[in-house]
Length: 471
Image 1 (tube, rainbow, N blue to C red):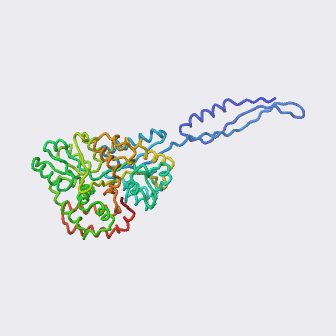
Image 2: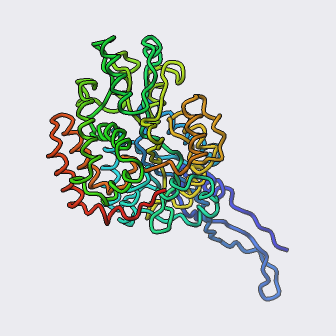
């Protein structure tokens, strides 16, 4: 008959080691010594013999907590709250994932891009990062820094949930590389409703109406800037210029121009647009060179500007940063609306970085980015339109975006990539912004035309932009 007795001291030591080490999960194995007695038969005589046994017990390692390492530049009023809404939507579905966020201050993501590119170059990519559609996205694709998402798009049937021009803006060589979560409209003119009501003004929808409105405001309120502008990062100037240029060129030639198919030196609408842009200078706040976009937007609730031309993200800034209410304190119209109402747009998007530390978690993130559960709270806060056109426009609380969303649903072919999304390569675009910003300070029509024509040649825009198709 066998009798087995475990040595209690050995078990207690084993238990103490496990208890002490469990939180750190440092101990991988534990050696336990036991003394057992057993009956053996020696030459026909039963005897009791003690035997020492050594048992190696493998400790169960604590599972690694899943992470999502993400880069974004949403730090301004309205944007920070939108980023938090994104994470809440993701956490609602995947509560165990730890989100490691690396935002970098800087309007338009300029600083963030520098930090991100340094990490990518060093072989330390995040899992996912915010990028715009268009030429900026194509630069990441050409550098081999993003994975194609054909399978995910097929799984989500995403191409049938968003407008065709939006799908084209995030597709390179037939492959989608990111999931857009919104559509920002660039060419929106925001105005102080109380002021316009007081002066009995109608919001302008083309250039001549804009000048007439500014003249009326200047006559009644000589100390008030008609147009609030922030030129510190250059692209704000290009936004205003593009609104003028769209009216002069028309949508088809606007696209051809930025694809490098028209010569600035001989394309008369470009020259006329520069002349008209120059004529707007007296109506712009004199401190525009030192302001960012959000500081310029704040001039409206601050009472020092009557209007500003900015993208849909200004809605969030005016409401969260300025304490104004859309449709009550401020109104908005797309500009221009004559002779044709075109919406210049770009999307905020996320993709899967090549070499991502947590690819499976990232795909879960992208699935949530494509969902109404994320897009509704995020876009309502941040100011963009929904990427998905199957979401009811009345999910927006303000009449501005309700109308815009319905217009996009009914007229998806009216969407054209804007200065942020960029038809032309980003290397050209940054220099182009410099040229337009310099023109506003020291206008020289002929010199600027020659400078821009040279940039088109220098950056081989015609070949580099051939990927973009509209509508």
